[in-house]
Length: 520
View 1 (cartoon, helix red, strand yellow):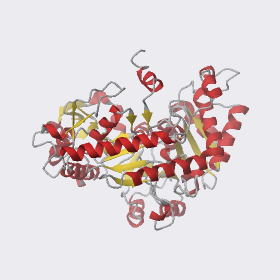
View 2 (cartoon, one colour):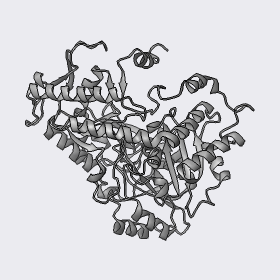
View 3 (cartoon, helix red, strand yellow):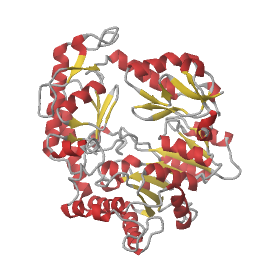
View 4 (cartoon, one colour):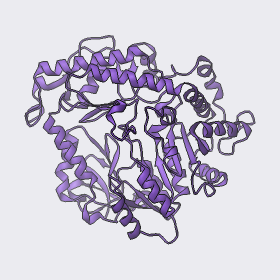
């Protein structure tokens, strides 16, 4: 218990600045009366609490308010996270034994749902080219009608997909369009700054994770049936609660649901002003970094969008730090200053402020980022060599350090988090791209259900696992995207790339101690 409670003690002792989910900022963005009431609300399935899997009047009224706020036909509280919500959504469409037209690089919960429901994936091009997508539809026509599109928008970096083309195609072909908009629950409440929300973009079913950007407890999720959906009658209460009882715990949390109801109230009444304030703070922070080597990818001022439609999350700070040693060393330095990011990876670092983030936190982040850049430049690690740490990664001056001694208990000694050179980072990007591309001999071989029978799989060293069907997906982390599905395989010429990713501190779920589980 002492170990698990350590983050809470660190946060409450001061000197902790979090730019990460959940959006309630350690409870500081909850009103005092809700903070006090939360533990008392940890009850379920008694007359005083109602049952989220079979809601009575109070819970139905709260869900109705959510539907009004997000302007949907119906909305459903799900307190076991969007991984559950995605399973429910895919059970509705395409349904068991159906076909799912989706990107290869989906959240792992999509693969899990496909395994449980025996759904066969058909992979769409990353750019959603309509000509290619239409050809895929023709090639994989399902007479039964059990098909669906699944699009992720926004992604982890706040980038959105222009859904208009795919929505028109889906409507014309009468195929449900599903949107994993887990990171975009706030878009509805800032129409002048945010991209068009998924709930108003021609989708039929939408997933939102409230805890990612709003003041709600983890893992708060909403499933929406869009108000203009052609399939609204098919996605009725009876079916949705049927699948909820299958995939969600039999003791769903009223405590999480109460925080969701508060998040709905907050964002409906204060969200627009809060989003505008955070957006302006981030634009100002970006301006303060202009001469320090950072390349801001978002947020961008509205004038930067030629179409007039915002294309990025207005409150997600994404910095390309490839000229400054990469995201890992930078995140380590920031943590020594008590500042925690949402995501660090070789090229980028991502910060996700809460809507209640105080102004002084943005000042502290800007100061720390400028100090880090100055330290990097003083060390002369410009990254022009093969790798900024020498051939063996041990060139002393080119290791990140944790800054000067401070109240967080760091002594400023050098760490073993090396800076990455620009060449390193470009190489990693090329590996990411090549691993996401499906080898020609893997076409049509994805079989998610294979991961359900682990007893039939054998762990083999990668050199021996080549060209054998994988029993588990391979997921590159960060950022957590699938590069191989069960049933596909690794080619011999990909082994060096997998080794390189490990050298650059990139984890691949599905590879343990240099081995992968395959079917012999």
